[in-house]
Each structure stands twice: as C-alpha cells, then as structure tokens.
Length: 262
Image (cartoon, rainbow, N blue to C red; front, top):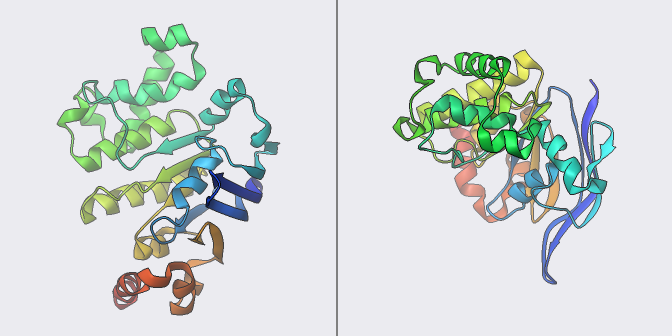
C-alpha cells in the first residue's frame, strides 16, 4: 500500500514552556485505520490538527500525498483540506439548517466565496450529498433541521459532510466522546466500513482503549507529546499501556480487561 501521510521530526511549541509535540515520526498508508490513544493532555488533538494545519507545527515535515504541507500558503490550504475530511467531537453543525444543507457545506472548499455565500450547489452535488446520507442511514432525515436529531444522528451528518468532499483521509477528533455506547458503536461501525469499503484512510483520536483495539489496523500511543507505541492492537498489553497512560493506567486497564473478557 502507498504511503499517504508521513510525519518527520514534527514538534509543536506553545510559548516558551509548553511543548505539545516533540520530534514525532510515523507514516500512514492509504486505506489504513489508525487510532491515536493516550492520556488527557498528551497531545492527541494537537497531533491530529497539525495534519490539516488547523494547528501549525513549529518544526519538521508533514508529507501528505507526496507534498510537504508545511510549505503551503493559505490559498493552498483550502484545496488541501478538501482532501482531508474533519469529524468533530461536538459535530460543528448549523442547527437551524437541514441535514442536507449541512452536508453540502462539505463542498465549500471547492467553491468561490460568492458561490459559498449564495449556497450555489449543482444537481450533481445534491445527488452526491443524498447518496452519502443514504449510505449512513439518514435518508429519512434529509430535510429535518439538525436541532431535531439525536447526538448519534448529528455525528453521522458530520461524517456525511466530510465524505461529500471526496477526501482521501478522514480525521476524527474524539468522534464518540459525547455519545452513549449504542450510538458510539454505530459511529465506529460506519467509520470502519468507510475505511474498508471506500479505501479512505481514517485517523481517529479515541479515549476508549477497548474501542481502539476493536476497530483499528494500527495504534499510535502518545504520551507527553511523543509516540511511545506504534503497532498493531494485538501487541498492546499491560506493559505498553503503562508506558502510554502512566497514572491513568488503572482506568484503561479495567476497560482492556473487560474487552478481553468479552
């Protein structure tokens, strides 16, 4: 499989004292499902947001699809981000708009400012938006306002908005943190299917170790801004968890033991 993303010695410094990422190195292949795990404040969200330059890394190289995106100008970032769909913990939807209107916002990266303001979308874009909503089981909600939806439905709208961009990669920042277990399973099943069936690379930040182990091809364990584990879920045992989680280990071990017991 072709390498889609590569981090080379990437660091992020906030001010004089706070180093959020320190010399991070890893590669991600096309179609891979990668989960980033680690304790609160480890740098997971910073790492994810450096990929699409929502946060600018301080040093190093970030190679996406053969290009060093650290060199990109602001005008080039708009096109870059069409290739990287983003799924947020709190959905980032416009509640007063309908489901399909929110999904069509995923096409804004392809529009001029005027087209975006006027909401000018082609018949093909509307057809594509409906097709994606159907894949995600939302065809009956197409014209509902988003404030009428459950949390799980809102997150599926968020995923549809990302998919309608025709991305090569989905970046998911704690996509199930606000959801109950049933809704969480539905979201993770859809993300896994998107990776498997569509060949789209998925990188997801997760607090839940058991979920990461179940769904991922590969785990990146982050602690204090560095990658302390990079490998398959099957090789994560208590020793690796103690390196990743440190003081938070007990809580995560309980989750892990429940996973293996199940």
